[in-house]
Length: 293
Image 1 (spheres, rainbow, N blue to C red):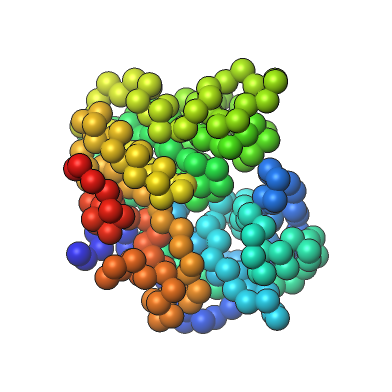
Image 2 (cartoon, helix red, strand yellow):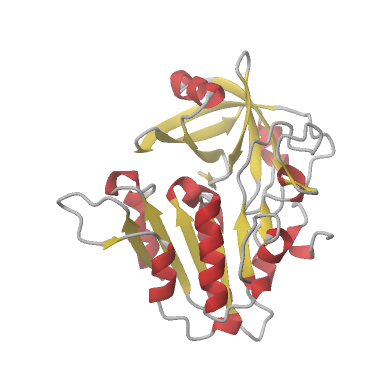
């Protein structure tokens, strides 16, 4: 299946192997083993030419350790910094965590497809948008959420459903209040509450069945998290009469080259790095093995 217009890359680099030198300027903890880093381009010319769309990712290169594909969470401070939220799980991410503020490394990108932001409004109908995040899956959705806040007048209601293992695993917790003040309806649920937790308990897919969806035909559901979670999110959305073509997900697999050469991220006939990571659900439904649709 050919990529839709909404999936075309934004400002792709003519040379995918070109590596921007960047430096970590800020690093702060989000959750256990999860850090957010602000990377600054070493050269102003690189900063000026770099552009990305919500949903895309970068390849972060640490000499002697290798590369890792990391979603772009935000561009901040007059476009000086690129924000990436990273779970420390492998050789590259451990090297970044050890290097910390002041570390120099390489950045290739942006790569991949984007969230379908052009479909949220056709000028006459404003679509309602529901974002469903599981754990650190909120990071690939963050740039989309900030886009929706910035262009709030172009969409209908915006809801964010967050699922985490425990209260301490909720990323961007300090920013939730500000997002609510910008018109985002936010619901958070955890699998394992502590004695101070007063919110929802259970898997995030249950939240989708509990919130009001007054205009399912004009509603988009966009999700990122564990694949099993996203399968159930898609099933719940479709059971709520949301059109299949309005359900989108971001797959996160082992993307080693970012241009479909190495084959590490192959899923059936698709390569997550160049055909995704953002897919319309019906493009990958059969590949994910979802039943009963």
